[in-house]
Length: 245
Ligand code: ADP
Ligand code: MG
Image 1 (tube, rainbow, N blue to C red):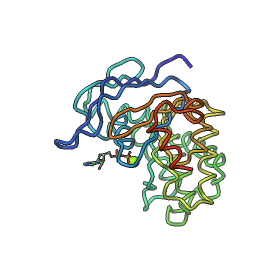
Image 2 (image 1 turned 90 degrees about the vertical axis):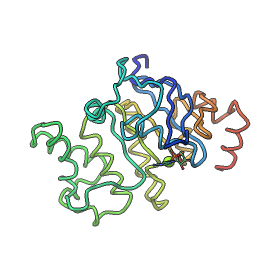
Image 3 (image 1 turned 90 degrees about the horizontal axis):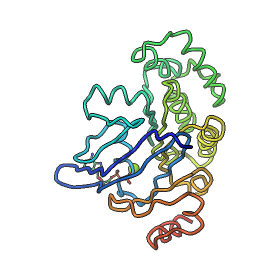
Image 4 (image 1 turned 120 degrees about the horizontal axis):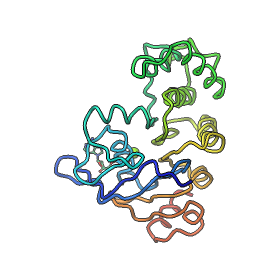
């Protein structure tokens, strides 16, 4: 866990005149799992979106493998292939089958060989126990199944980092475990580097190497996972954890 993949320095972000991220600093090392916690509206989604080039920022720098990102569309498009993201709402294309959803970016954007990507997609679908759904359309799947497909679709791009933004928040309770199990396996087996926003505190406690606790767009606490859940440094984080019980 030494190689630094992402580094964020003095990042500020405004929506119009309103500042929503204030002087954000952290780094992410290869294989590390960073968990972003904080109340609703604290800026967690916005931070993930800036890392992925979906939102601009108005100060500070983002480095990928030590190289400063120039905030240009071209550079973001390249970076987005290295940083996969899965959102709370299932964003599968409704008019494409499961396989077509997965193939689209690797074949059209990355120009990879379709047969090879297909083979890989099938392996990934087996892994999430959905290989029988290759030809199904999103509307034929449950929410949990759609999220597992969304994860597979992101992984098919061979990302170096995965960002997960409350991917179980819209799911029925019985669907949650299957999705979290996949994320846990990505960490345990593949040593995938990840940033996770979640409301599932037991899961966060198990998976987080490091916790960033945000409030009102500021990092209130940056603490190793084990320590954060046992004994947070700030009263604010302690109150948050108690409210989540
Ligand atoms: P979280 O994910 O922690 O709930 P968000 O990043 O969604 O927080 O929101 C942080 C702040 O930015 C909130 O005050 C929210 O209202 C505001 N915000 C989020 N998205 C937008 C947007 N597209 N335009 C303007 N304000 C936004
Ligand atoms: Mg959010």
